[in-house]
Length: 171
Image (cartoon, rainbow, N blue to C red; front, side):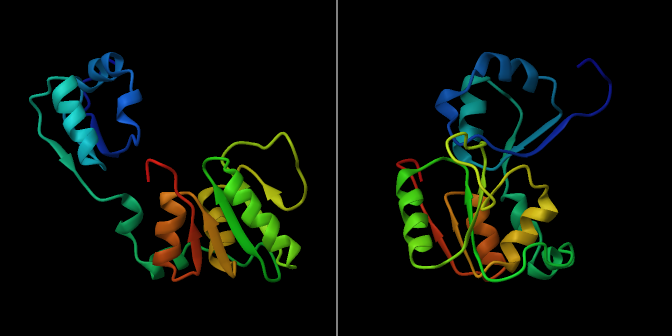
């Protein structure tokens, strides 16, 4: 985009830097006045692949810029009544699915939020397309959290929730 306005990237993130289409990204980043990223590996990648002379600053994830009280002030009245475990997935994982099935077999209600809509099975226990406030609401009012997400884990810690985090080979 051609403009005289300053362009700043704050806390950009890319977990799998080796899969980036770096030529297009480098072309775009040349027009930025300042760049900060969340991962030092991404900062090194940009410096090396884009031959950037700019300082690429590594900053903490913005989720940590607020404390529990800040997040709690955003959460309205409870959406889901009763006791439940909140499961938030970024990737579909058979180990997590088996764990949730086991919880259900033991009488625990599980509400699942999937990053991608599951076309195999859909019922009232699966939700999609939550906004950030609704996401925080389901997370905060749950009795526990199951996730494979960095942000699900970070918010569980910030909000002092019981949680289980499933990882992958890159975690």
